[in-house]
Image (cartoon, rainbow, N blue to C red; front, top):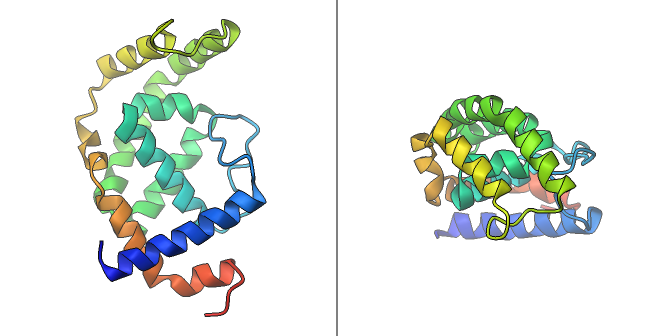
Length: 178
């Protein structure tokens, strides 16, 4: 990590702490009634959205993103399409078209399967494979070769550099003097 990225990382931590204090329950992308940080500036929202997209795809693939963010995936992709090029990760932005296509195709399946998992109180892949079965069906639709851009730190490091370059904006948001 270079100096700008370290500065961006410190700014990110300050923004995250501020959001934790405002919203102690944290981001709830899987909850239909979640406010999606709508009252926050776009630049703040994008930090949380991109982090959620990258975490879910890197951890379990695009199907996991859809499952975990089902009520808000469209909004999240809308934000990401604009945010990735803005923050220096255009390849990630280009991948949003594939992510949208996959989510649109599997949304009904994810909704029905998740509803069943809730009704049966069964979410564990190990003990009852509803989630795992959904992921298998999602992978059968699209193996996600386009996801490879999410398997590294490129977008995260670019975002930290962007944060540092926009320090004034974030300091004002935090109520700090530049």
